[in-house]
Length: 396
Image (tube, rainbow, N blue to C red; front, side, top):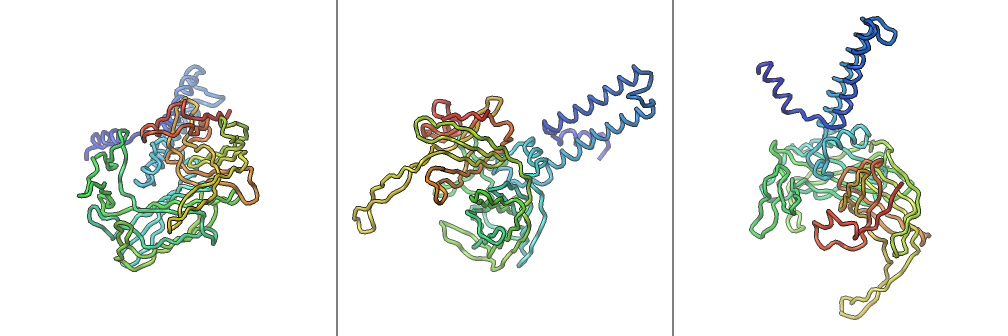
């Protein structure tokens, strides 16, 4: 490849995230400023000779190159397709998470029966951990879903409050509610009208993404040793597992991340529901919320297996968190995902809620939390809820 063509290719392929570009602009502005000062002061800048000033200028140039090189590389090196899709992540958010040390690159492989499983990326905070594993040497036909028969996980020797995982199917729902693959092509359907997942990547590999959660308030996942066993590999159809490979892939490592979190104490009533938000903790990937909400029991009528009437008791829940409002006025609804809610043992006044997100959030940019006042009628409305259907809790 000629030098000119190589440069042109790099210019076309490299997309510099906004946050990186801003830093580069700042560095180059310093360079221009130093150059101007050098000329105005007869070749001297900040008390140094012209030669020393030029050294400083080229050091700044080197710093700018380093900013553009290392940060941009960090944004593109370690993200798996499954993680990108799981969090609808932008290039700027990749840089943010890597600099915040919420996500970490990993490269630990285990090979059994000719199949290699590699843990390749983690995204972790105090209560949630998302892990991506690459699987090489095993393939399935189109429309067939792969799965491990058993996945056993412990953190610091104990089972997490909840775990879940599946092979990444490359499916994406666009703004019109239509299924596409992550490359933008329309998703295929099977004979029954079901959507066909695309589990095998172009290079023949597959990806398994798992999530685990702890709802122990004072027990962070960060820094804890994790043990994972993937047992046997096969396919699944209509919840029935068909074995294929009899093997176990075992991993032991530490869940690494920074303790980046924003905590806000407040007292904000959610309309006339009786619930008052008293504390919020926001990380880039989850929320923890405390409410003053005395227990209210309600009776539920039903029938037993013989058709006899029975009655059970449950408790009233608080309005559900759906998303956030950012400082620039942007409302993000429908981003709050599954987690854990309820009362802790011995406390029937304080209601607590943990939930993950399907978007990356900069805690410092959150202006308000958004709770559902009126349930949305469609999926589209859920993803773009109007203010009159929300309880808005300002955080300033």
